Length: 144
Image (cartoon, rainbow, N blue to C red; front, top):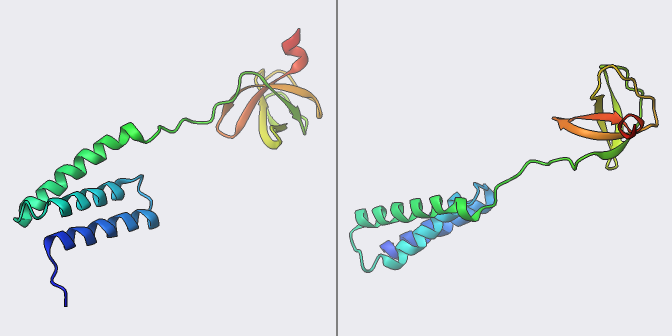
């Protein structure tokens, strides 16, 4: 049986953590812990005391985790382009919800001006979005 040296222990821990990242994605946190374990495996012949190795692993792990925010891109929410065209699928009564065809998909829509009714199969302009509801205005009102 192969004796488990500190270097072998840290290699096993690093490999397990990196493989866990593949199975349970944690935004690279487990990978950074695994990479820290690989670094400690390289340093283990120089630092024979196991408690110091654990301390070094924790320091490298914290450094890598905090440096992740500079390398992982920030997610930005989907933003509608200014005043894009859509076509109504259903009638949209004043102050109520109907359906429009926008970018090839059917969306729930409401007229921005709650006093205006919009007929079916009419071109409209999308002015904003709140959740899954598009706020629209008839093209003829915008052009005049």
